[in-house]
Structures are given as structure tokens and as C-alpha cells.
Image (tube, rainbow, N blue to C red; front, side, top):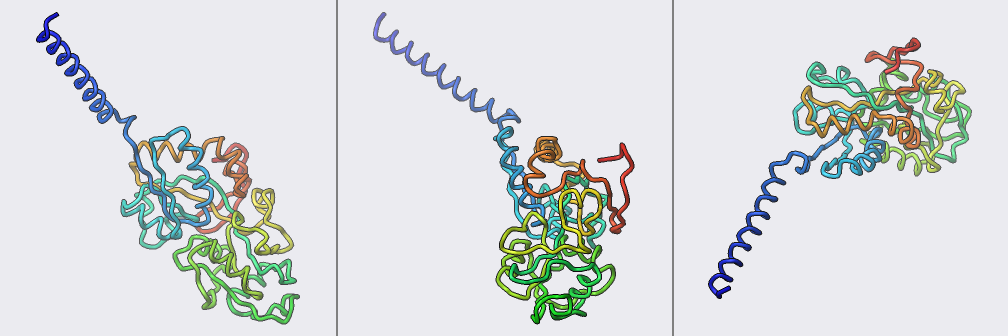
Length: 300
């Protein structure tokens, strides 16, 4: 083979390699499965730990999907998903409970239930409050722990911010129309817990998922916020955890929500993370806070 023939041969081989590489690149770019997708989920800090944990499992089977989870409160989540700013709005309350939100334009996906529990500083001697006493404390009618069997210590109420779904649920189920007193407000379950842990006479309320040794949870009417007490309706303060989307969510968003509602998450991760599976509930709650028993065969 002459030198010129050799050069032509190598030039042809080089062109074939270049065409192969370019073709593979274009195929990757036009293949929907090869493209990455991003989902942003914003809202309820009560639901945030569960969704963050679910993301880890989901991304093992959908590595091209990037799921970003942020707090901000239920009101923020509902407003942002309604405006199209994010793919998922996390909420502790029904969309129709939030003023300014057109619930008819959103899809509701209930993924769990959380107990909402009053918490106090662990040094406080009080272990139980009646629902009436709890309401009176947050209304500002009882201002010293001595009035409910505790020490002579002023009560410091720590409330959630106005956009909080946890607060909306608490006011609906506990305050029942009574006005909450003016008090310090915080925008997340985690911040509330830290303050109560450091202030001797403080009281607030958080999702059960946030309770640890830093604070003490109280019984209400002699009942603890256990898994079985929540499922059977004996614990009076609980809410659904919602993932709201627009009417036409992306395929990646649908796949993620389907994963969160799957037995893999509902039967394992939900319970491990101190939430309640929607499939175990024996009672149901409507947007007005009315709680009724679920008939057999009518679970979600």
C-alpha cells in the first residue's frame, strides 16, 4: 500500500470515528430517557423530613431526576405550586383552607398522616393537659403553669407563623374558634423545638416526627400521640400530609409521587420516620376538621 493510500485509509477511519461520536451524542440529546429532570418540592416543614428521606430511595431508581426539597410552610408551598413556580407544594392542610388558592386547579395527593403534639421544656413537671386547658393556654387565659398542676412558672407560648399548615390544623382542632393570643411566632417545626428546649416555661406544638429528648411531649385528655391512638382517632390533633401539583404535572413528578404512595414507602419509611400510613387510618378528616370513622373497604 502506497503512502497516499495509507493516508486516505486513516482519514476515512478518522471520519467514521467522528461520525460515530457525534451520532451517539445527538442520540443522547434527543432521547427523553437520557435527559435529566428537576423537581422542586416546597412547603410544609412537618412533611419535609419524610419527603427528604423518600428522595434518597427514589433517586436510586431514577438517577436522572434531581429532586430538591425546601421548607417555607404550607402556605408558601400552596402559593408556589399554584403559581407554577414549583412542581410540588407540600401542605398540612387542604388547599381550600388557604385563602387565595383555587383548589380546583390543583391535584391533591395525600401521602401520610402526622400527629401534632404539644411540647414543653423537659424540666417542666406537667405531663398531661385537657383539650380545654390547652386551648386556654394558647388563648392567653391560663398564664402560669401552677394553674395546671405545674410549678410557679410563667407560661411562654411559642406559636407558628401565620402561613404554617401545622398552625392552621392546630387552630382548627384545638382552638375551635377561640382566638390565639399574641405570641412569639416561628416559621418551622425545627426552630420551635429548639426554643422550647431552651426556655423553661415554654410550650408549643410540632409534628410528632420532630419530637426527641430535647423536649417533652404532653398527653392530651390522658392520651399519648402513639401510632395506634392516631390511627384509631383517640388522639385528637392530627392532619393529612398533602403533595399538591398542577393538573398536568411532569412525568418525573408523577413518578415521584407514585413512589411516595407505594408500599415501599408507606409500609416502611413512613412508619420509620414517625408518620402514619394513610392505609392504616381508621378515621378520616374533611377540610372543616370533622373527623369520622372510615367504613370497611373505603380506605384511600
